Length: 583
Image 1 (cartoon, rainbow, N blue to C red):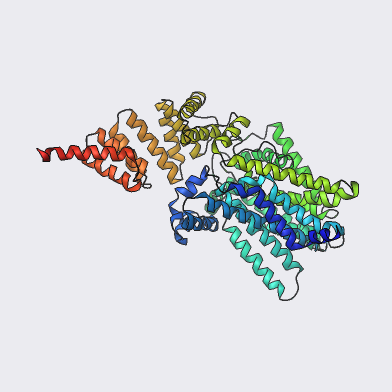
Image 2: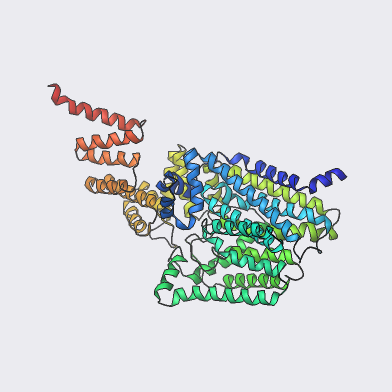
């Protein structure tokens, strides 16, 4: 028994346990197909076809590091999801290791060096890292490929925090090495995803909770910086100054709703996220929340008051309970970019909690390894083991659901029947699975129950799917209205291409072949696609422009050699063209 305890305290063994835990709960996800933005950001993103940094910078300058890793995946594995998932698992494991390393470093700070029980010094870092690695709320940032941007940002962010703590604790030449780690990780994080811009606030929290003895000046500096940032964001919405307007454009994704409206929505969303961390049941990709509530809603006011109470308690407890207080404050700080006053089209998404959950993992680990043992000395290890086992089972089950898109979206529809996007995605998955009758039935139900315009603002990809449902249901008038609205807001070329294709199909169905041809050609200008060339060929054929139709069918076969319809049509046209010469 003594040997097992010594083995369990060894860093190498703990790191191995973390690797084994990730492998067991995520190892079966390598065959998970692409979902939602994966198709647009990976499969149909021309910027990923090259490793040219200039092309990637032009496509997404503020996320170039993340997209460069996706481009590397494409270079070595094309559109096969397995390679992308393997990299995501390694990133997740690296982030879990860094949570472990950060917890160990924090236990060596002046605030905790002599205040943590000896038994907890080994158990706490491993427990925190296992909670972070095994929690089912993390699956969206790991198993949903393109959300690598969230997990990769967390990897660099945690490395920057660890480097900062080590820098503050180190002496001599080692300080330069840790300063380099902190600077490099910060730079990588800033060019992976925008939520890395909260790093200075996280460093301030480290100083406040663990490192600085002159806490008065830390308080004053942090308060001034936070007040300045909030004042600047307020000015972007209220003052008509050129550089402020540019800053306003940079700090919002949408103008569908204002900063105050978005903040109201996040007051409730943050409580949902907290509930899902402590009771991770009912996870789903789309929560059907696309219209922010007003501040006149008593629920919003109560939610905001609750957050203020939690923050006040954490700030008051920094001196007595540094680690759990830091975990709570870090949770809110890491949410600031995506869950405060920077409007984003989707009001709720689980992957936004990936980095903040590191703070809650530290707080929960402190509760299980420091607070609980004196109160339940015999049961504490069993409680910890049961919590970790439950998280592992829930994560494995959630990942198993991700493997089957039909089951995945059916589960989402069952849990959120009123949400539009899950039903639209389910209809598409039914069609791809060969269940055409189910797809048509669901498409007609959606069209019948969803008038245009919808009550809430919808992302452009959802608008495109809704327009397709109208088309399937024969509501061409509504389909054209949805396409027109989608084209006005569409920023993603592939979504715009899909909308143009859909409008062309409506015109084709109505016998307006020239208008259909124009839409197909505009869609092809956004990128070559065998399916669109096939529709173009059919429109040309309907106009009896046989020579041009032959050229379009040939392009279909150049892109998709196995297309039987194009081959049959081309053979018939070639024989038709050969008849006069044989007379």
